[in-house]
Image 1 (cartoon, one colour):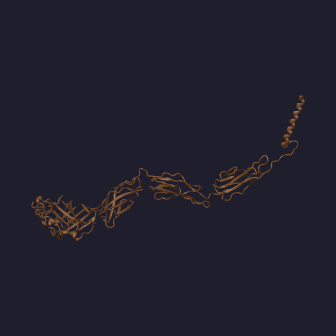
Image 2 (tube, rainbow, N blue to C red):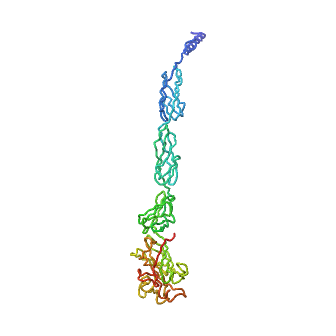
Image 3 (cartoon, one colour):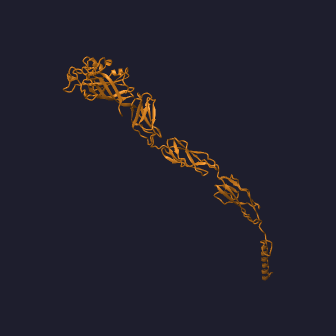
Length: 501
C-alpha cells in the first residue's frame, strides 16, 4: 500500500513526462528540430486572345505545384465575373479584366504566391436589336416606338409604309396618316469594331376612333357652265369632313366617262368636246376613304340675249328684245326667259342708240319651248301676259304662233272689240343646245319672231285695240313664215352671251 507522499510523487512524474512529449511534438523545448511548411507555386495558362469580347467566356486553367485546388477571384467585377472554383470567366463589359489566382496552403504547404491574370475585353462585333412594347396608334394621332441595340449604340428608325405612317428617324415618334398597318424598321449601322445589326421591324395596326368617319354627302351641289360648254365649275354649299381633314374631292360625270380630282373647291371640269348632256356628282375624301357622292347636279347657267328685228319704217329705231334665260345643258332645256321688248313706233330719233327712248314692254312669262329637229335647237317664247292669246282666231289658228299671225294679217285677239284685246306681246328666240353662245345660222335666224298687240297709252296712236288699230306690230321673215312683219320688220340678229356668275 502506497503512502500519500509516494502517490503524489508518482503523479507529478507522469505529468512531467506527458508535457515533455507534447512539446517535442510541437518542436519546442529541449532544443529539438522544428518542422517547416513546404513551399508551393502556381502556374496559369496564357491570357486569352484578342477575340475575347463582351458576352463571351473563357476558362482559366491554373494549377498549384502542391496539387491542391486553386481559387479564382475577379478584381473588376463590373468588367468580368469568374467562377471561384472552375475558372470560367465571362466578359460583361468593354474594359480590362483582372483575375487573381490563389492557393492558401494547408498543414503541409505554405500559401502560394498570388498570380494575377489581366486581359482586355473587346466590344462584341455581333449586335442585335430589340423593339420594346408596341404602342397604341390611332388615326390622326401620334405615338412613339423604342428599340435598343445590344451594343448600346443609338438606333435609327424608318417607315416601311409611308402612306400609312411616318416616323422620326431619331426619336421614334410616329404619326398615323391613313388606316392600315404601320411598319417601322429599326437599324444600327455599326462602327469600325461593331458589325451592322440585322434590321428588325414592328407592325402596328392603326386604330380608327369611333368618332371618325368618311366625309358626308356634299350638300347643295351646283354645276355651272363656263364661258363655253366645254368647261363646268362644280361647288357645294357644305361638306361634312367626318372629323378628319378632307384630302381631296372627286367630280364624276353622269353618264360616266369624265372624272376629275381636286384638292380644293370649286372644281373646274374640262370636257373633251362639250359638257352638254352630262350631270356631275361631287364626293369628298379623307384618311378613311371616299364619302358618298351627291346626286348629279345639272349643268346650269344664265345667259343674256339681245335680239334685233330690223324696222325699215321706223329707222333708226328697231324692235329690240333684251333679256336673259336659264339653260340646263344636262337636259338641253330653257327656263325663265324674260326681258324687255321695245316699241319702235315710240321714242325719238334723237335719243341714245340703240333704244332711242322707246317704250319697252316687259315679257316675263315663258310659255313655250319647242324643239325643232331640222334647226338643231329650240324656239323659246316669252309673253307679256300669262297666256298665249295674241292674234285673232276668227278664222281658226292657235292665236299666237308667227304663222298664225301672218295668216290673219296680224289682227289682235278679240277683234273687232278693242276692249277684248288682252294686249299681249311676245318674242321668240332660238337656243342652240350644244352651246347657246354659238352664232345662228341663217335658217335659225329666219325662225325668230315677235308680236306686239299692246295698246298705246291714252293720247297715243290708238285707233282700235292695238298700237296700229286692229293690227298688231310684228316681225317675221319671208323664209321663215312667208311674209315680213306688219311694218316690214324682220329678224336681223341675235347675240347670246353667258351672264356673270
